[in-house]
Amino acid sequence: MLKKTKKKNEETEILEFEDVKKNKQKSKKEKTINVEARKWRVVVLWVFLIASSGFGLYRNFSAINIHTIYRETVVEMRVQSTAGIENFVRRFANEFFTYNTSRTAQERRTQQLREFMTEDLIDLNRNMVTNLLQSESLVEDVFIWSAVQIEDSYFGVTFSVIQSIEDETGIVVLENAYHVIVYVDDDAQMVITRKSFANVPSRAIYNNTGLLNDGQISGVFRNEILSFLELFFEIYPNAPRQQLSFHMSDDVLVDFPVIERSLRFNRLIDPVFSYDNGYFMVEVSAEYFCLETLTNLTATYRLRLQQINNNFMIVGNY
Image (cartoon, rainbow, N blue to C red; front, side):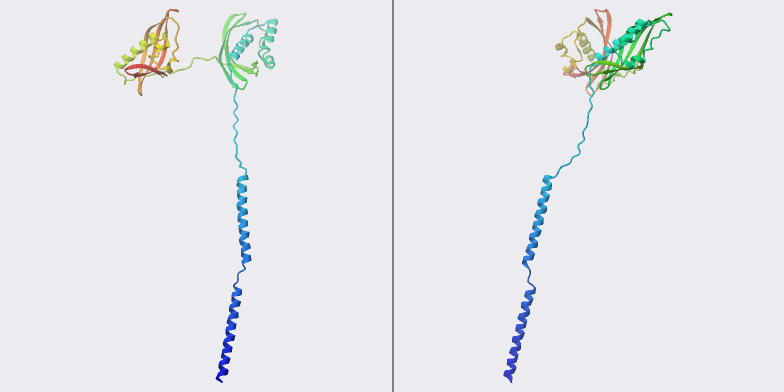
């Protein structure tokens, strides 16, 4: 009886061991990871990363840089001498303001004006001279007051004409001013396109803003400066540049050309002194007697002086 029971227990233990073994094998089988699937996912991710990086580099090297370019167009007017234009206007004024009432003179005048004016302007001024009153005009003088380039190829010229006008009552001398627009082509050919009235320039109102005597300069310095200036102006008119260089700096010499005239120094008139930051400012007039015209002539100067090694030197003007 005991043997049977023992044998049965052993069989039971064997069965339980086999069940445990099967359960462990089943559990291990369920926890197995599919390595192949994970490997492909990693490969796909790397391929995507490499492709993204490559595309980024491609865009960086092949991208088109777009910049906004601002272009500044500079229109330069031709700057040329106005001497020829002034002469052209003088000739025009002499022809235009010289006239009489005879038919022959008027026809000749109209023909001459074709060299100076446009046809439209000639037609506009055709009735300037009438036959109602017997008169004659002669040009005494023409003054050019300004000649300015107003546009490319166009110049504005202001001038005045002194006319001697004779009629039945007598002779009268008048001065009147006018303004014309002159067109100049590439070959320097000219024509007047417009004419209008202007005013003869008059005397300007000017307030003297000269120096005021400065109390900083002692009487001793004033006398020394006056002695220096008297010596300078005595030799200035005819002295060679080498001699003048002992009294003024080289950059000021150009403003004091040698005057080749028979001038004899008389005196200094109304000197005014001022001191500013190490410089002596002097406004003075020098009077000379001209041996050619037998007259006293004056010239006014504004000078900047500096004391160098106890000697004065003209270092500038203002």
